[in-house]
Length: 295
Ligand SMILES: Cc1cc2nc3c(=O)[nH]c(=O)nc-3n(C[C@H](O)[C@H](O)[C@H](O)COP(=O)(O)OP(=O)(O)OC[C@H]3O[C@@H](n4cnc5c(N)ncnc54)[C@H](O)[C@@H]3O)c2cc1C
Image 1 (cartoon, rainbow, N blue to C red):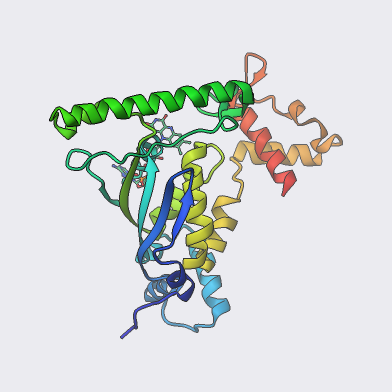
Image 2 (cartoon, protein in one colour):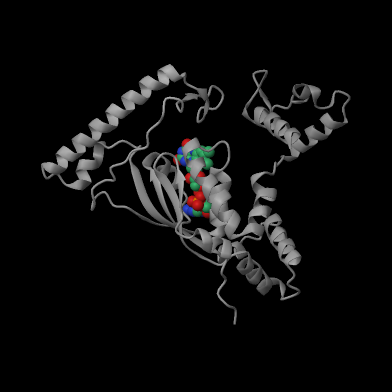
């Protein structure tokens, strides 16, 4: 019979509140399993074999490389998180977790809102409609922060007034801003957690949720399942995938005299260009080459 798996590094951070944003946090409530349980589960498939640490590492890397995902579902984690509602709205789209959220129908809404300092206002990105690029000047930022303070204060006063008049909590809350914090217990298996981190640690994810994902990945998962974390970073998080068209184009670029100096000259495929200009796919391919060169 196997013994329960304890991960000493994880036990050290149980219940510790990792601060995120201005008032949020992530706290590990409990966990089940670790790298060992992944190996244990995989060995049911592949037979016992030897159990040296280096072999366990190799096995985990093999599983990650070949998308043999079910052994990663054997480890689970339960987090307590405090998140502004706009980031939570993105978080909750990950359907493969078990969630219990603070009820603002039952309880008074948490009296805390995420505040943005004058130097934190981001500009709308011109090439990514969903993203931000660059910062608003501090002068304007100061005005925006002042107005935000007033708005948050006013919306809370309205909420409190409704509560004082006896309005039901479920209705009184309707005009609270999305910056209001919520809390939840969030339980997920490691396979689906890595999927969440892959999407939410990525630079395309919104800054706020990325801060949470970075803490969960770098501060928690790295200690809980160090071998899996290393394999995940290597094969998923920091890897670059090329389509077959991209791979063929890359080989042409490498074999040419100009090499990587004039990438644009090689991006003539209809998939990379529209109306004579690089389209989304072309721009992303170029970004991937640049990222690869920085490695
Ligand atoms: C950068 C970014 C931008 C986004 N922009 C938008 C947007 O503009 N609008 C928007 O609505 N959403 C947006 N999303 C949310 C996104 O579309 C996903 O809903 C979210 O990331 C959850 O991903 P998921 O479904 O893979 O995860 P999970 O729900 O955790 O599911 C994990 C995996 O389980 C499987 N799965 C789960 N449920 C089902 C199901 N019912 N049927 C089939 N397979 C299932 C799928 O393989 C899925 O990948 C965005 C996400 C990111 C990261």
